[in-house]
Amino acid sequence: MNAPALAIGAIFLACARQLAAADEPPPAPASASEDRLLFSADGATLTGGSGGGGVSALWLRTFAPQDVISAGGEYQQIANAHWTNGVLSGSLRLGSGTPATALYAEAHEGAGDIAQRGFHYSVVTAGVLNTPNQWLTVQLEERRIDVDTSHGNLPKLGLSFHVAQPLLLSASYADTAGGNLGTHLTTLRVDYVGRALNALAGAAGGRAAPAVLNLLGQIVRPSPKLTELFAGVGSSFGRSDWQLLGDYQDVEGFKRTTITLLCTLHLDGRSRSP
Image 1 (cartoon, rainbow, N blue to C red):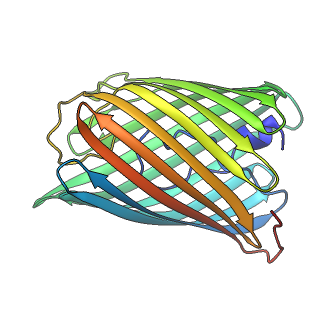
Image 2 (tube, rainbow, N blue to C red):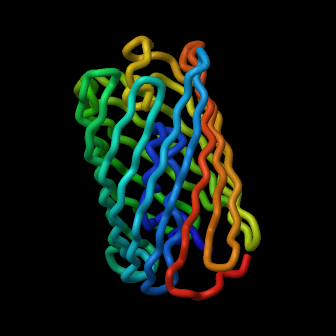
Image 3 (cartoon, rainbow, N blue to C red):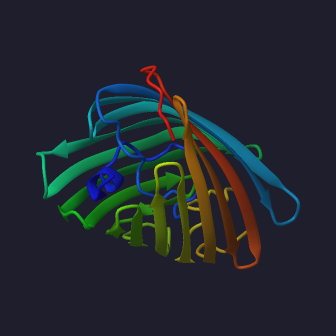
């Protein structure tokens, strides 16, 4: 699997996870036209004994190796807040060969409640991935966030280095442009893609608004300091791909641990050997 296949993507998984852990390379595209179903379930614990959980389901249609559309929905609950979103996303590769460029976009639109008060949830993302050679991919992204009383733009610059056939190193920086998000995040990540096993690990640090971290309704400062660690492992079994992710956040003493299980089911009926 080469660098474009790792970094030019199908879509971003629709789990309602916070920004940094979700800042992962999209799943590798299918080799031909194909339909897939993506499911996820997560559970979380919070400081103080409360917690939460969520589910998501997506349908994906691959028209070409890197041309994908998807649609679905997600539900998330954390402490005294819960929300439901519709999800629509897609990616399009421009040209062929190397250098390569791909465009992608994603929208999460919905609403929820914090205690007895309703709120609107909208996160819209658009970006471009450029692979000038087989070992480097550059990502430019703009994300618009309007969640409850938090709003603003969050542009991001990312670099991915394909240092060896199975190994990908990534780094990104996101900084608020307008609004009241007050978010400044640096993320480092390493991905291993083997024939029988995939793995990832990373860390993030900086400051982020509670809505960006999906800590809706929690009593934290508007832009607290964030320290985060995350890791995951995955493999394929027959027609399905599975991934287990763990994420730990420390928001100035307010701690959250999340475990997420993801499953991709290939509907073409072809066996996918590990």
